[in-house]
Length: 305
Image (cartoon, rainbow, N blue to C red; front, side, top):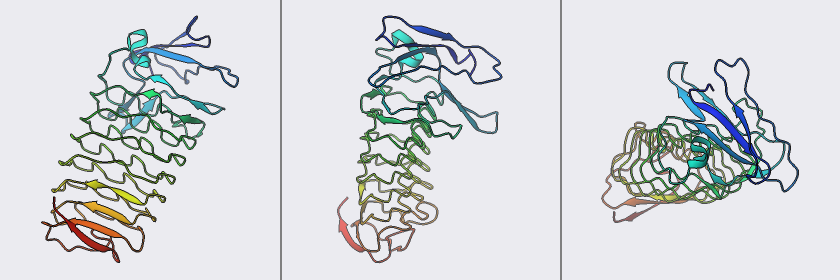
């Protein structure tokens, strides 16, 4: 990406005593690659002067473009990602300005699958004002990742977490998701293929957006219990494929009174366990069963809203 987005990237191998700065350039014909050799136990600090490290190009057939970390060894990520944009002035920065700002950051989108990130618990994604696609596919395909960072934002943007942890096959616990104001496709595909994920996070929003949870837990084959879904009114495609392929899932509590159908819940429980419990709003009059409603063979219980 050119200097209109990334002016420079700096790194330090001596805990910030000295820094090596790599100036970016426009009209590159090849990728700008920064190589750092490390030994076990080494720490490398990174900072940048940039408006964004990735973006969604509406004019180029909808392509995503980004800068990313790649590694030949397992590593942990710590610190505040805002330092990649604001350099030494990252403290107190909680607003992401540009769409797609951190998309693909730990995902080699050249599909070499070489980012061996293990622990991101202490990686701070401090922004509370998000933009469209800002964390899209940030950890996509990080098969060594076991621990995710906190996600503090309570108001989301379109596709902001889209495919964020998709294919993270070692991830066992999802981060808390406190957001109550959703946006179109905000969680779409977020944990798809996370085959080690056992428990889903609480999803407190009562007002949904189009595609907001579509394919969110698609093929999470170890997932046993879904979150309480408190929303009573569905939005277009909001739950499409949400739990599709979750072959161990045997409990769902969903308070919607809107009649489920292919407009809202297409294949949302395709391939779940053959028996289980579905807790339904006592005010709901719908009786839909099968992959778009209550899974066939499950017991239905009722609960007050």
